[in-house]
Length: 308
Image 1 (cartoon, rainbow, N blue to C red):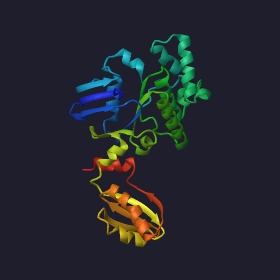
Image 2: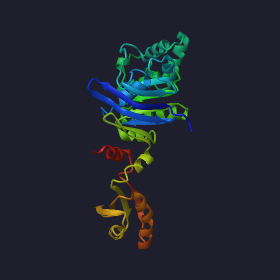
Image 3: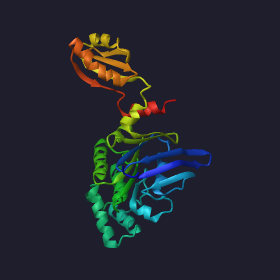
Image 4: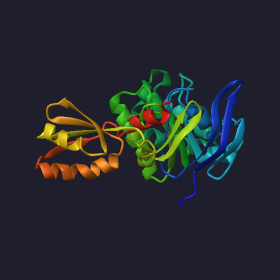
């Protein structure tokens, strides 16, 4: 089994009387991991500690085997795309990336070459020499990602990289982040929009009010909520006959009819229900044309795990 990329134990972060992180312990494996939570959940504080920009109030932090705080070598192995912009608006994208690489110790020509490669990678070649102040929101997000990867970082921290982008740009950035994973880089990407993370990875970390709610494969996390009723939509040619038969099953607690050819089943034992459904349909000689679950997604997982 691979060593964890990130490992934290009993991590705390306080801003005066405000608790940003409360006794967080977790590990993340190599590859792409998603950091989920609503605004104010503690995601940015967590990332800034992992990058080495903040010292935690308590607990132990290990990233790529080292403590990130006050660690120059750590900065050379990681890349950070912050949530908020910090550009000199009069600079061009090429100038910005070149100077960022120079600050990391690259010689002038090497920095220029690295900047050109990074701009090409994020498809900003045509705007490379324009002032950043003229860039759209999507272009600014691309530029921040470019500076995070321009020095061949092994581990990337991307804080809300899709915020404010239009649907087309969002799809392009999702594919770009996926490509980092295919190259063997590890990525921790945060978002408060659950379907964005769902499109990137099944390995997720859920934060809520500074606390770790759940961590791991989304399907494993899904099993944590089996005490809650699950909804399953079944589209069939004989909705009422199938509903009557299913109501006699112990795994089914309720059935409704949102449409004439669809039944919505509520069950507290989804595995038993999925195993029983084909047998019931076969006995009735009715076809099941479509089977789906409104609860089989990260939105439902997050709602269930954070409800009081």
